[in-house]
Length: 305
Ligand SMILES: [Fe+2]
Image (cartoon, rainbow, N blue to C red; front, top):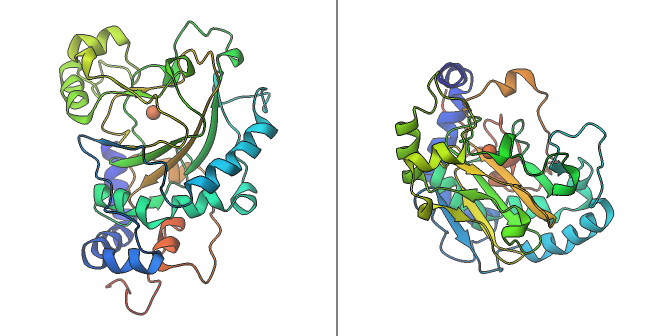
């Protein structure tokens, strides 16, 4: 992560500086131009925040469209070679155009104000790991060994991009039977990470419950069990988390991943980037969110050389 951070800081120095300057100097104007925020921005506290208002802009459209996708694609394995045995991402590139509600939601001023405030820069939708948009079904029926937690069913802290923000939307109600996204707040996570020697050579990326609870209090654990349409904002690069553990009822989530310009992995050197559709009429802010490498998109916001 350290090497990736240094390399990316050199490679994306100009983009990073530009995104930070625009956040500092022009965020209010950029948000206004993108569409007036409908409320004071939700603030992440201790690495997370929940919006249970069910009223964020475009959320209703997202939920409506999600029912069509669930009806069409859920319940059986879409790929013979699934990325994870208990979890599948059913989002398709063509959905970006077919279901514009998702990008409208992902680039709405209310969401971006929250994410930008946390990242202290104009965010970009992730182009590599994890994909910026995932429409995921967790289902224990897909899993040969549902009683044996593995991969992301075990506690870990994401390494891809620190800090980052996930915006997770429940597309159906979630209860403990749905294998909810489960996490420790940032302060409890950082304390446990230090005590466990996480990120050191002696410690693996995935950590057992037993080890985590030797260094953290179980009563600090939060489960994202809320009604359909509830939104979780979380820094998954600061908070220990796991999910999809024994989802005996199918769990459906939209997962949006936002990063700054400088990631802490090498995924951009290895993977072809996701490309999001951009229209000439899109706001400057929306263009920046959808094009990570953009520089100089208006005469008033040219990056300084
Ligand atoms: Fe993760």
